[in-house]
Length: 288
Image 1 (cartoon, rainbow, N blue to C red):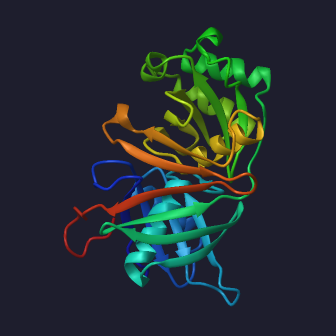
Image 2: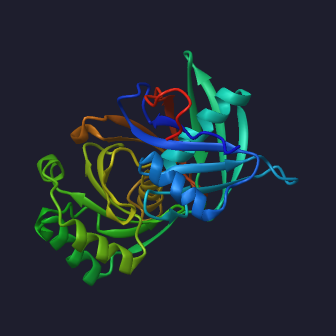
């Protein structure tokens, strides 16, 4: 019998905050069509499908949005880590994802479980000008509203994101975009989300993440994009590593979340956060 998917709010200590994610735990992964169907039924921005460890100790993991598979998802990884912690206790896991191996460590602090993932090696490149201009047009931003100290970039830490930094908090707060136009531009460039940020201080950022390619207007907390941001800042020389960043996201959506990003001198980026189960509202015996 197919296991029932669980739901967790990642990067939050309350079910009403952070980013909801589906978590499916089972012995072996379902067929791709079944995973896509389950993810659509769950309806969260992503659902993580996690199988039992193989002979090499790695757990096969795949991620699906309601509309498509994505190579890696940070908040669903945090949610899956905490779900495994509740099932098996604190400890370490290796997720074998389409993007590569991701180490996940589960721990408990002050009675609350949290998980830390270490991303694949990040990389970045300057945003191609045609992509930049099309993205700005789609989200209604002007080029002079960008922070010149954080140049636009395509950044990767398991999935590609376009990083655009607003010059001030008001620009980030006023997000209203052309869904179809932005989706087309992102699909043409292989992007998963836009990482729109405002830098409050050297180590504190606020973020918003349009996710039209997944059928989602906005993601409340995006761990993969936070990892990509940390890697971009380090490798572009915009941050002195090692460093710890805090990314606040979801505030404008009424689902505040907090993402901790530890940026080492080299290698993968560590992203940490709490996750908490979302109570099941469906009638007894009814699967989502």
